Image (tube, rainbow, N blue to C red; front, side, top):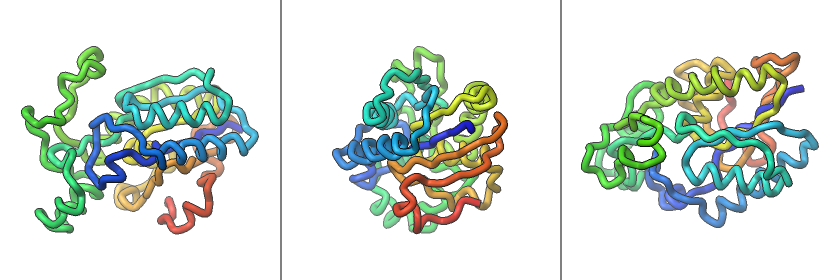
Length: 240
């Protein structure tokens, strides 16, 4: 049976500070490192082997993967990094405190920016201090850094990576770990489970809790899906 583990990075410093992060390259907190260790322990406890890994080009996801693989004693597994697995770009909201932004613009407007499927937040201006357009990791690849993204736009850049890199490996019988971000992982969940546009906005991906998909007969249609830390996931909305 082929397996796919989706793991959102452990708590980052800006998660702790309640700030919109997006493409800004913040690191894990001590709690985030501990969450990554536990995620690795949970994956190890399944007793199943994995063949390869994928992650974004953002350090909170990369470090989460390192810590998990260290905990699993599988640091030698091949890792592919792609900007297509980056977090959603939060545009002009990047760096702002979420509570203060809701007080300024209204909770309902911020909810639309954060949780709707197709409405992006206001775009980031070129002079924004968090503009990543000249960052060497993107410039070298010729990536046009977005000014803002909705979940729909995030899915549109994740889908080609899924189709060309992830799905072929699953069809080849390889079990994978993907360490990424809340919204890029929601995009993958939508693709894997054919979740509707209306329902995907309610899906929550908690930090550091592996979401394990199992596939039969080299299919990419999951036979089972579950969080490994079931107690932590008990109060999450059902994925449907």
